[in-house]
Image (cartoon, rainbow, N blue to C red):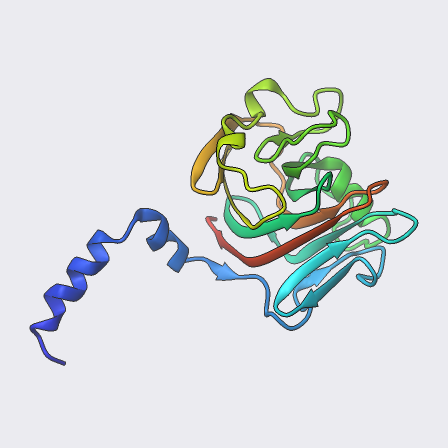
Length: 222
């Protein structure tokens, strides 16, 4: 190798943005062909989830039953990135971290319902309960739903409706941070979700909706 090239290579690496360097460390979760590495636990992925030209498409059935597609791998501290596009009024998001552990981790019966009812979620799109866009906010369930400190700030300045948006979040210990299109919109601390869990992508029940995901990548931090 020409040693005169090495300084130029090192200089180029040093000038890369931190986000670009981090992106190089993330692992893809989609193979672009099928749903290998993902599961819906209680229901078949069809007709809710399918790969179309390398894009993961989640769409409700005519009965609007809804579905959550989960990674087979579980995570605790994690960095997540994806590009997401959703239809007007769609209620979707990424579920992570469990409030309570499974009584029996090997028991698949009712597991999907248990996870979805006990996970914290990064909201994407319209909140069914608040009837407004809450992208970048954190949903904690119960009567709180979206605590004030967990609500995304300045999202409307960067959000591209019905177009591709880059979503990133980090869960480190009790601290959660969310970015939308490169802008940090949320920083929230909550100690009530200590459990490892699969990541889940949601098609909300009762909603006529479509959500598309591409370039989903993660980095486990523990």
